[in-house]
Structures are given as C-alpha cells and as structure tokens.
Image (tube, rainbow, N blue to C red; front, side, top):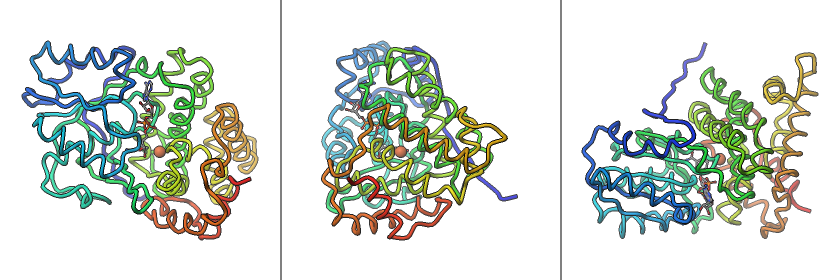
Length: 388
Ligand SMILES: NC(=O)c1ccc[n+]([C@@H]2O[C@H](COP(=O)([O-])OP(=O)(O)OC[C@H]3O[C@@H](n4cnc5c(N)ncnc54)[C@H](O)[C@@H]3O)[C@@H](O)[C@H]2O)c1
Ligand SMILES: [Fe+2]
C-alpha cells in the first residue's frame, strides 16, 4: 500500500450566516489583532458585506484597510503593485479575504510576502516559499475554486501568456468561513463556470495518478453534492439548499485536489487563460467532457464510480457504458448552464494550436497526474474539438 500525506486548514466554520461569526472566531488566530487588511471585490460593497465586516472589526477596535483593486485572475504585477502600495504600508497583523478565488489567492500571497524577503517571482513553483506567512481568514463567495482550503495561488504572467501557481503549505489559511448566503448574489454565468470548476477539481482528483483514500472520500462526496445542485443553483439562484451544497461541494473539491492534484483539464486550461483570457471556470468547463472522453479507456472503472455517485449509473452497467453516461451528463450540463463552446469566439485559431499545446505540456505539475499521457498531437486534437 502506498503512503500518502494529507494536510488541511486549522479551522472551518460552515453554515448559513457564518460571516456573522467572524468577530468572535478571530480569537482562534492566537495573535493580538490591531490592524488587518481586508481583500475583497467591488460586488461585496453593494451587498453590504464590507460594512458588516467593518462593523464586527470596529467593535473589537481593529483598524481595517479595505483593498478592492485586485484584478480578476490577477497578474503577478498587479499583486506586487497592490502589495507595495496598499498592503505593506498598513502593516497588518492578519489578512481577511472575502470574494472569489482571485482575492483569496491574492490574500494568501500577501500573507507570505509580508514575512519573506524574497520576490513573488521566486515563490512560483512548489515549496519555494521560505517562511510561514501572517494568519489569513478566507471567506469564499463563489462555489468555486476551493482556494480557501488549498496550498495554491495562481497568477497570470502576461509576458509569457501563462498562468502559474505558487504551491506552499505556508499558503494554507488559519480560518475558513463558509457562508452559502454570500453566494446567493452570484450572477448566473459565474455560478455556472465556477460550479463546473469545482466539479472538475473533484473529478480530476478522483482519476488522478495520485488519488488516495482521503482524496477519494472528499472527491466522491463533492461530486455527489455538485451533481445534485448545480442546475438548481443556476436556475433558482435563491435556493439556499442548492447554494449550500455547491459551496460545501466546492470546498471538498479543494480538499480533494490538495490531496491528489488536478490533471490535464487544468493544464490545458492554463494557456486559454494566459493568452486568450478565457476565465478559469469557463476554460475548464469547455475542456472537461473532451478530456474525459480522451481519458476513458485508461480510467473507466473510476469514471463509473463517479457516474454512480452522481446517480447516473448502476452497478450492473459496464464500466464503459457508465463512463459514457457521465461524459454525456457533463456535456448536457455545459449546454444547460450555457457554457461557451467555441474557442474561436475568444480569438483562438488553428494556427495557435501548436504553441498552446507546447504551453499546456509544460504544466508538468498537473500533467503527471493525468491517468493517460498526452502527446502534443493529442493536446492539439483536444483544443481542435472546441473550434468550429
Ligand atoms: N488557489 C486555488 O486552489 C485555485 C483553484 C482554482 C482556481 N483558482 C484561481 O481562482 C481565480 C478564479 O476565481 P473565481 O472563479 O472564484 O472568480 P473571481 O474571483 O475571479 O471572481 C469572478 C467575478 O465574480 C464576482 N463575484 C464573486 N463572488 C460574488 C458574489 N457572491 N456575488 C456577486 N459577484 C461575485 C467577482 O467580483 C468577479 O467579478 C483564477 O485566478 C483561478 O486561476 C485558484
Ligand atoms: Fe480550477
């Protein structure tokens, strides 16, 4: 039996209204808090979320600097600039982040940039961050990236037209609040794309070469929760039941990917984000059924288990038939959720494919997890499925 290693966050509070616990739960950080930085997105101001948090902090005499200009899917330069001009001068004792993966990732990076002399660029890759960061409190408002429970943060390098990751145990937060009420306001297109991203995390973790009993447990339950709620969350945005299951499913997906890693879908998505600005969830959702059809003959028993947990297949079905039903369902979801299907609409043309394939193949951190190796021709053929 192979050895596996599991790590996760220290504290996780889940339930409708969890945000109201923020002030009380800050004691769990075990550091005196005089000054904090809150990294958030504009959408949170209009919803009154920023004011609710400020009131809880003011009641405890904590001085807060609100930062709302981290870009969507930030570049390395944007993170460095916001850090230099706003985060560092405030000299915080801890960082809070409330928003989608873009601001959660940013806060995780700010926390280690505050305690390390090294440049952000030198942190790229696996285990390159020297010292632990300041404590972070992460509150996701998409469901989602699972970033609140992963040791990863993703930045875009515009010069190289690539998205790259910082992976370090020092990025794991001290406290996570999961409040599904914060996700009721998600616009439909973001519900769709981020929900499919979450499902992709769990399915890729489940078929990963590094899958293990811990990742399997979280991946299967995540897929069950998401399969049972993604369409309802999209069609009835106010459904607290669906939003709650989506948020928990997304966090479980983050736990699964931390334990087992994502694979070729995410690797192929990176050049789409880096060069063509296809958002992370949309890129994954577009690629998912095609990459799974490619993988089918190397992991059909696992795809069958995934199909069964999603309520799509029965024990007596053959592995191939059950796997086929799962892929059909994913394709049906992309249609119901109105996920774009045409890469040409993002400016991708046949002549871009060789370069994109090389870029995807270089994401070896994820490619090594894929159950079936991909040649450059295989990768090009997968992208080509999304061209007219
Ligand atoms: N660290 C990880 O493990 C990990 C995993 C997957 C993806 N990511 C990264 O996360 C980023 C994507 O994050 P995302 O998909 O969560 O979206 P996002 O943070 O980029 O936000 C997308 C949009 O949704 C809006 N929004 C968020 N929550 C809202 C709400 N409740 N109501 C209304 N509007 C809301 C934001 O303001 C923004 O305009 C990418 O950079 C991706 O690479 C990180
Ligand atoms: Fe993802």
